[in-house]
Length: 66
Image 1 (tube, helix red, strand yellow):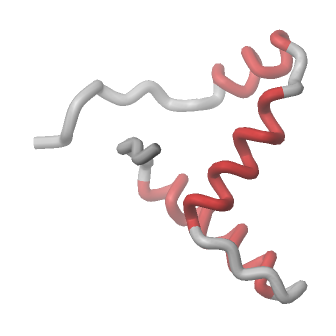
Image 2 (cartoon, helix red, strand yellow):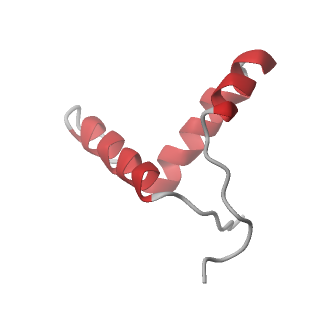
C-alpha cells in the first residue's frame, strides 16, 4: 500500500544516517524498508513507552506545506 507522510529535515537526516550505519555491515535498505522495520520495533512496545516516544515527536500541521 502506498502512503504519503511528512518528515522534518532532521528526521529525514536520521533515516539517511541509519542507512549509512547499516551499510557498514553490508546492508543497504531503502527508506521504506527502514521505516517498516521501525514500525515492527514499535508494535510491541508498552503503551506507556510508546506514549513517551510520541511525546518527543513534534506536531506538524496536517496537509501539504504551502
